[in-house]
Amino acid sequence: MSKKYNVVTSISYPKEGAMGKTGSWRVFKPIFSKDKCVKCLRCWIFCPEGAVKKNKDGSVSIDMDYCKGCGICANVCNVKAIIMEREEQQ
Ligand code: SF4
Ligand code: SF4
Image 1 (tube, rainbow, N blue to C red):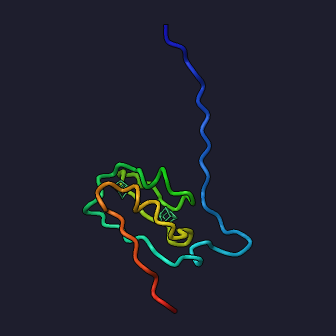
Image 2: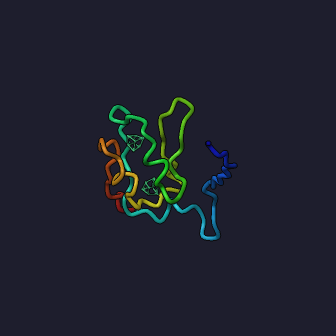
Image 3: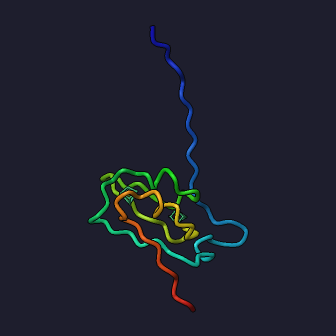
């Protein structure tokens, strides 16, 4: 006999904090290759900042205003559709 559960999820979204947009903290930035992406959404699941956005067509995009450049998305991407590159010095 199967039992039904009520599943409650919570989704958070990046928002400007007291110190401004967190994207300004970045040392490395993710470079996304749409042609390599297989739309598995691992980067979307694992990004700790909620900076990976899921688009209506199943593809992803990165909100650079809030991406901190941690590199987790690049690490979890099995097809290397995201690589990390050093931000240019200002
Ligand atoms: S983890 Fe890689 S392949 Fe999967 S959605 Fe993200 S960029 Fe695309
Ligand atoms: S580098 Fe980190 S913060 Fe930026 S999109 Fe990837 S997982 Fe998210």
